[in-house]
Length: 126
Image (cartoon, rainbow, N blue to C red; front, side, top):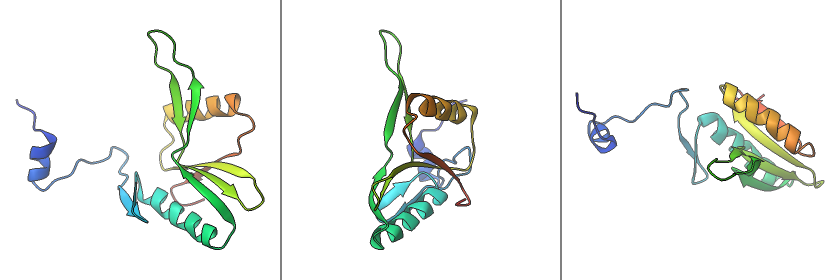
């Protein structure tokens, strides 16, 4: 059995499915990994227009374990880092599926960076 290339798959009019059924969505000219993440970003942009939010950083990365010779490090990449008008910051992750890997990385994040105000938002926005 021969495998089809991605180009051949696209030529059939198909697109690969995300294993968690997330739908890549574009908002404000930016592609997001899920519709929920794009919608949350739109809400943040409204807060920014209202002056409640002063900065929105996309995909901030946090080193959880440094690389060593022969070993790759571990990095956690959140969806957003938001700075509010009062100066406080919040790291936000929009999640539909909480995988074991994700839960472990969040524990490591909270342990290594206790000063970070981390918030997980469900795919339903809560």
